[in-house]
Amino acid sequence: MTEDKFKQLGNSHRIGILGEKIAQDFLIKYGYTILDRNFFVKIKNGPLFAEIDIIGLKDRVVTFFEVKTKINDRICPEEKVNYAKINKIQKTAQIWLDKSKTYQDYAWQVDVITVVLSFETRKARVTHFKNV
Image (cartoon, rainbow, N blue to C red; front, side, top):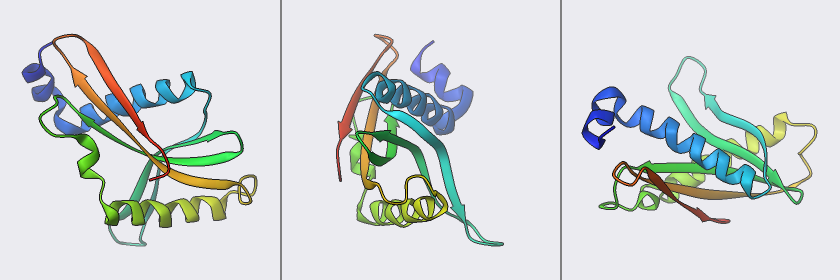
């Protein structure tokens, strides 16, 4: 499937779903247990506040992952994760931890996973930025 054909089929939403699946497989390969996916907080009768793409556990550290996916190298996906986005993820992470009785006392951090897709080579380049 070509890049243009894929874009026509589902725009950025489908690209994001594919990137999250690739990121999840990457994390499992490197020893993470996936605790939750697509955890979001919504303000009552209001807009979505924030979403955490993947929540994982490794070595007694709960990690909240933001996944950014792009089809090409023209723009670095990590450039889309700014201070405001990290701040929202941290607040949402605290809500998830408050709801969790099991992991409340664990250390935690926010990481970013970037996925750059190449439809020509049918490969993905995954980069893990730890404790951003």
